[in-house]
Amino acid sequence: MRVHVTRGRCLLQEWIDSRGWTQTDYAKMSGRPKRMISHFCNDERVMKPEDEYAASLIFGCKIEELHDWTVEYLKEE
Image 1 (cartoon, rainbow, N blue to C red):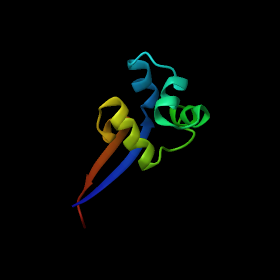
Image 2 (cartoon, rainbow, N blue to C red):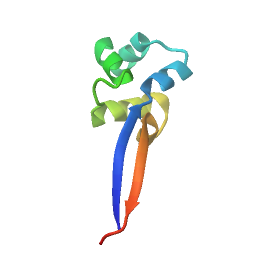
Image 3 (cartoon, rainbow, N blue to C red):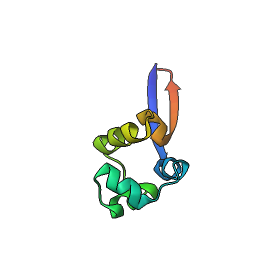
């Protein structure tokens, strides 16, 4: 069996909103420029593993919770 995983929509904006923060607030906490946070939130750029790890620490969540994921289990032929 093979596993095919696809990263979907970034959920960073939802996490920011859930805390009542702005992108600017989050940018200050993460140490990343506000413009980069905007790119992540609008799915214009993909978060690097370091950005995902920092977000998981800030929000107290798992990295997997930062995106919509599609997981397919494929049979080997």
